[in-house]
Structure formats: C-alpha cells, structure tokens
Length: 164
Image (cartoon, rainbow, N blue to C red; front, side):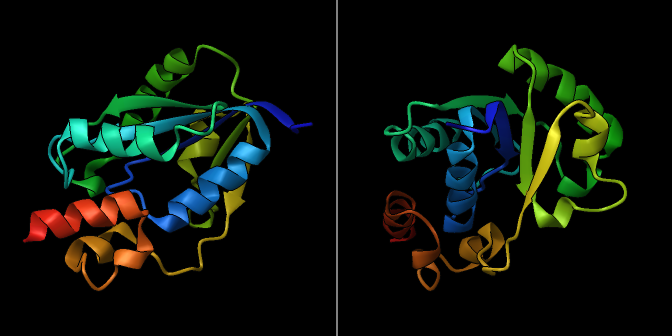
C-alpha cells in the first residue's frame, strides 16, 4: 500500500535524463497517483513541444498511476524564475491536479531555508531525493553522443538522428 494518495514531481526535463527517471519512479512507488508536471519551455526547450510530449508519453506509458500534465513556462532564463513566479504557477498547478497534494518530491538541491516548494505547497510533505549521480540535462545537451547513456534510449536515439 502506498504511503500517499496524491504526489507531485515537477521539472523542465530538458531533456529527461536517467537521474530524473530514477527519482520519478521512486516517487511513483510511494503514491496512489503521481502527478508529473512537465515544463514546456518555448524559449528554452531543446526539442519542440510535440517531441517532448512524445518522449514523456512513451517513457511513462506503462505506469498508469503517473498522470502527466504539461505546464507552459514562458520565462526566457531560468534565473528569472523568482518566488513570485513560483507562487503564481503553483496556483495553476494545484488547479491542474484538482486534488489535495499530499507530497511534493524534489531534488536535494531544494533542501534549503528558502525552498520554494515549502512556500508554495505548505500543506504538503516534501521529500528530497539525493541526486549525487552527476547526471544532468545540461551535460547531455552539450554532448549528446558522449553522454547518450545518461538518458532513456528513445531520447538518445532522437538526438543521434538530429545530430547527423
């Protein structure tokens, strides 16, 4: 039996890598339903919206308790995503989910005094996942061939085709 009814895990997944995947599947094991909030970043995504949606739907197709929501983020630079933006976006995300969020999962890098998840989801438990695996979307974007084992095969294959 799962510890939580409704969980949430969000990110830009630009692109989704195996570190993300490991954390998402760990979160999924703890929830009756896990709401995956996937940032669609028109100003920053490395793939078009339809390709990103295809990746996510394919990767999670065998996980019926993972519910994927797509959230458009027009912010031009990640550093411009301040607390006011977090608060505004959390209202829309809560409406998307439409239920009380029992738990929010995030990386240990958010375990700080000013964690925006704590401010935006004060009625939810927060669970931090250690991400010491050194896998990063940035590293993969810089060299998709060298770091192809850092991402699910569907994503590595896509980037290998595009690179040619």
